[in-house]
Image (cartoon, rainbow, N blue to C red; front, side):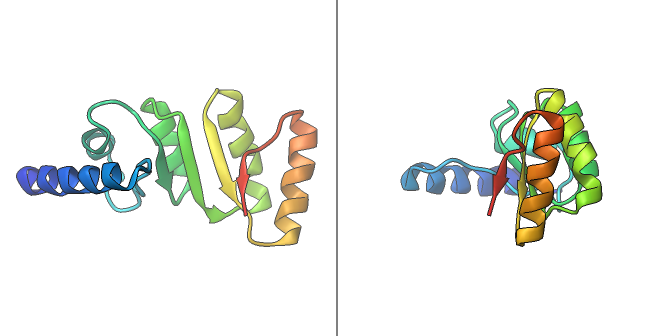
Length: 119
C-alpha cells in the first residue's frame, strides 16, 4: 500500500464528509485491516461496514463497537450476531425480505433484546 496516497485519499474523503455534514462509515471489505480502519478514523475506532461475520468479529476484537453487517442476514448467522451484541458491540443487520424480518423478530424475542436492523 502507498501510505502517502492512502493518507491523501482519506483526507479528501474526510473533507467531503465534513462538507456534507454526514458521518463516515467505511466499508472495509477490501482493506480488512485494523490499521487501515484506524487511518480512516484518525487513530480511534469509529463506525464501520463489513461483508462477513468473520470481519465483524475481528474488528470487534480490535475495539470497533459500531458495525454494519452489509449483507441480508441469513438466519443461521443470528447466534453470532447476538453473541456480538451481548459483548456490547452494536451490530446492525440488513433485511431484504419479510421472512428475514420475521426471523430477526423471533431471534430478538428469544434473546430478550432488539437486534438493530435496517430495511
